[in-house]
Each structure stands twice: as structure tokens, then as C-alpha cells.
Amino acid sequence: DAVAEVRALLRVVECRANDAPSLDRLRELFSRAGDGTRLLAIDELILKTELDPTRRRSLYLQLVAIASRLLLDRERAELYVRALVAENAADLVCVREALGVLLSLGEPGWALERAQAIALECPASLAEQIYRWCAVTAEIQLGDAPLALAIAREGALKFRSSAELLLTVERITLASDDVTVAMSTYDALVEAASGPHGHRALLYRAGRWLERAGHLDQALERYWDAFNFAPSGGAAFIALERVARLTGHLERAVSCYERLTETIQQDSARLRLLCKASEICFDELGDGSRGFELLLRANACSERYELDSRVLETAHKLLAVDPKAGAQAFRRVTEELEGRVELLFAAEDKARCHLQIAAL
Image 1 (cartoon, rainbow, N blue to C red):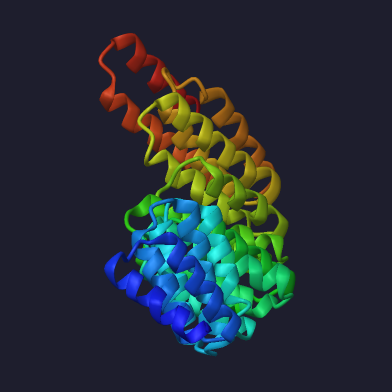
Image 2 (tube, rainbow, N blue to C red):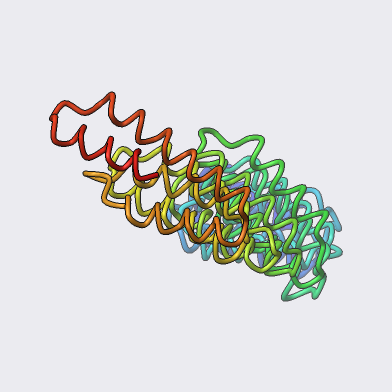
């Protein structure tokens, strides 16, 4: 008599809640009868006294199966998944398996949405991992790139230090040439960034994305913004000069060379930068006047005005191709020498300087 047996076993369990043989037999009887409600109650009772982690995970999965298949209660099944994730937050394999169960409970969009909801109740490091899993699942398993992008973008904005989520956004938007989504993501991250270095890194990444996508003029603007946030001779500066050359806007690079000299104390480094900027003006921009002014500034950074002969040679060359600009160059040299005289102390140096002025 199954009914009588159940009553007897329930009386035993009432007295000894952890009586394993009685609980196992009750599970068998309720399972055979398809009584999901009582089967769920028995498994919950077993779970309360079970200490073995592996056995507990198995029980949670059984509870999910009973709630979803026998009781058709998806919301209750989700609660067991949440409990399983919370209890095993340090075990990423277990968390992924638990979240994977959600895909068996309903349509993929619902499952991934619930996984993201679960993530918001987890520690930030685990929540980031869950968002990454959701994005990968949407893209690889479901083949839904737009959904993967939406999840990755939301995750990148929530967990701003996550390089992996941002990389996912970059990769998917590059594949679809979705400039709007990519730039709106970068703009939001830049706005929330703290400190000039964080701003510069994100602006540089935005420029790199635009360059890879072939939008060079826009890339140049982003590199320009990145450089100006925290001027240095690093990646943003190198990228800016490269794209400026490709787009025919090398005057931007010259401005960066000038800006860098304002941040460097070492005269030899400033001299090198100004000379490079001067060469670009002469050789590539055809702007002799600006190139000459930069060369004068470089000479002022040298130890004993070691570029004097080069300055005069350049002034003569400038005079040959552009008399007006050349005449202005000689006036600037004269003015510079006259100013130099006032700063010199040694009579010999002063005399040499006056002879140079007289020669001019």
C-alpha cells in the first residue's frame, strides 16, 4: 500500500528529519507518482542537512528540473539557479553550468536577460564574468551578434575596468562598421573616466578603432584629443603623426612637437623635437617661415648656440626661394643676436656676437 507507506515514512521524517533511507524512499515514491510539489519539498528538506558541495549542487539542479518540468514554474526554477550561483560564486565553472541551465528553461533572450539580472546581485568581479559569458553565448551559441553587442556594451559601461567586454564591443562594431554604437560607448566611458590618463587611454582606443575602420579624419581628431589630455611622446602621439601623414594634415603633428617641448625640461630633448618639427615644415609642408622659427627656438635650446651656422644657411636658402620670407628670417636672426648680447657676460662672446650682427 503506497499511501500507507508514505504516511509511515512521513512520520519517521517528522521525528528524524535527516533520515536518509526514508527520504530516499519518499523521493522514489513521489517521483513515480509525478507529485512535483511533494518531491520538491523532500529535496529541499534533504538540501537543508546536506554538507557535501558536490551533492548540494546536484540537489539544486534536481530542484530546477522539478520546478520547471513537473510544476512548470520557471520563476521558481530561476530562484534555485540564483541560490546555486550565490553558493558557488568562487567556482566559475559551476556558475557557468548553473547559468547554462537557464537556457533550458525558456527562450534564449529571456535566459540571458535573467542571467544579467542574477549578475547584478553578485560581486563585481563575478558579475563581469557573467556579462562576458552572456555576450559570448549570444554571439557564438545563438549567432546573434546584435544581442551580443548590446550585452557587451551594457557590461562595458557597468564594469568600466573590463578590457574584455570593451574588446568584444570593438570587435563586433568593427565587423559591422557600427560607428555610432562604438563611439557612443567610448564617449560614455570617457565621461565617466577619472584622471587625464584614463581619458587619454580611452580616446586613444576610440582613435584606433576609427583608424582600423578606415575613418582616418575622425581617427585623427580622437588622437588629437587623446594627446592634448596628457601630452607625451607615447602611443597617441605616434598614432597622430602616422594618421596626420596619411590624411595630409601634418601641421597637427608639428603642433604636437611644439606642445611636447612645453612639457620637457631637458634642453637636448627639446632641441631634438624642435628640429624634427622644423624639418617637417621645410620638407613636407613647404612652410619655410614656420620651419625657420622652430629652428631658431631649437638653437636657443642648444648649449652654445651650436645651430648658428645652420640657422644662417637656412635663412639664405629661404631668401633664395622667397625673398620676403628670407628678409624676415634675417631680421629675426638679427633680433635674436641683439637679445643674446644682453645676456652674455664675457667680453669675447659679446664681441663675437656684435661681429655676427655687423656681418648680417
